[in-house]
Every structure is written in C-alpha cells, then in structure tokens.
Image (tube, rainbow, N blue to C red):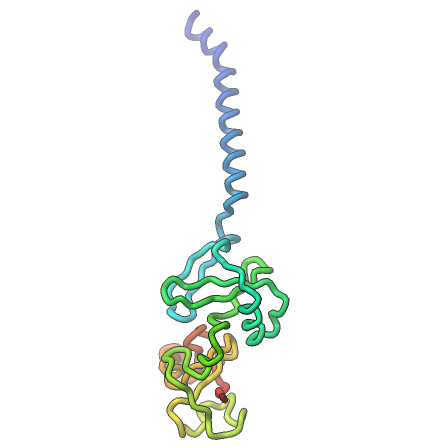
Length: 199
C-alpha cells in the first residue's frame, strides 16, 4: 500500500477521532464551569471597611447567618427583615462583613452588626469609651462643626453603616479625604457622618 493510499483510507478515521476528542473536551469543560462557576458572577472583590485590605473571595465562601445573628442585623437595619443574609470574615482583622445573598451579586450591608451591645458605647476604631454630648438629641446633628467641643470623646454615627466612632478618629480619617470639611466614616469610608451619638 502506498503512502497516498494509506492517507486516503486513514484520513477520515483520524479526522473523526480528532472531532470526537474535541467534542468530549468541550462537554467536560462545560460541566466543570457549571459546577464551579468563575468570573464576576461568582467572585466578590472589595476593600475591608475596617482594615482597608483588598478582599477577593468566592460567593461560596459566604456563611449563612444563624437566627440570633440575623436578629441583631435586623435590629440595626430593619429594612433587611426576611432577606437571606450571610457573612464573610476578613482574614486580616476578623471583621464580619454582612451580605444580602438574595440578589446577584450579593449586596454588602455593613460590618460587625452583631457585636455585643456593650461595644456600642465605645469607638469602633480606637475602642475608647464614648461620652454623650451635654445637649439635647438632634440639637447639633448635621451641624457638627458648630457644636461646642465640651467633651473630647463625643461619638458620631455613620448614616450609611451605623458605625459609631469618636470625633477625633472621624476627623483624623477624614482629613486626607475632604478639602471642604465633610466627615467620612472610618469604618466604611462613606459620608455623611453628621449625627451625634447619644448613649
């Protein structure tokens, strides 16, 4: 048998084998992607609102909250009642980031919602005890710079994540971020932070 005759007879067979191998490879790859989805739909990238490290993790790493933890979150954020909640713990500072996982991508709600209640009387950044302002609730809210600085450890409440931080920590964090005097939350880096904490 000549070489030409060999290729005439073997060519279609080799072509069929290559085609079958490609089909098998495509099917296996498709199944692997369905079982282990990758890309933006399954990966969460964010900055930790407490230690500011970059976090990259899979949606599968979120751990569902138990009933007690969900109750504590709802106490701070009543609008998330009956939503499916889960957490991711920062490997750098152990902050517990809470997500609503009934949407895609998961919606970040905040950090450390279910700390013990007594921690709320301390600054979330420096942990020093906070004193209440010597004026009525709401008197200097939204006008922090006009308030008399009669106590060094007044607290401010973030309107976005509900963290309570002392005035010195908030001002120190905001100094590099604002040229017009707005105060940013040291925990979630958002603003406004313009409501005084009353124990």
